[in-house]
Amino acid sequence: MPDIDIDFADRNKILDILPHIPASIRENNIVKKHNTGVYFQEIPYDPFTDTANIDYKEAEDRGYFKIDFLNVSVYKDIRNEEHLNDLMNREPLWELLEQRDFVDLLFHLNGHSSILAQTKPKTVEQLAAVLAMIRPAKRYLVGETWDRILSEVWQRPNNDEYYFKKSHSIAYAVLIVVQMNLLCESISYEFS
Image (cartoon, rainbow, N blue to C red):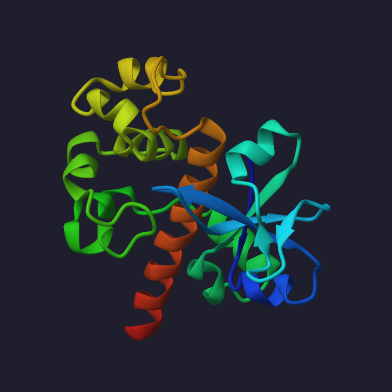
């Protein structure tokens, strides 16, 4: 089953106008609303909570298709599509990833400055690999050569440890490049 995540500056703006049923998740035998998952198809739901009454994992086994709508605040500072394309295509100052104060401002990377200082990524693919290495299944690659990292990081683990798929890692790496360039843009405006 495909795993689809869609990022929004404010997911509620779209969910307020699209009919949907929020997914549910079972934790410690308690069913609660899933943080991001929604269904755009008929699925049994609890009319009192307005959430699916089947846990999202069981729902997937039954053929229901969940889509994750994610709030990503970085998009609030994007002026338009041209601005976004410019930020995505502009080479960032990769050296900033060796500065803890800067890294702590970044989406998904805050708190992981030691890994970035050690690996020193210089491409989107290397940055994506770092995002994967932050997860438990690939943590063992921290400190290895880029050749070894890139040959193993996208292999599916043999156990149930949490890992990042390449598609998610690349998408988030590009978003981090956008955020890095936004931060540099805002700093240059402050000094001009």
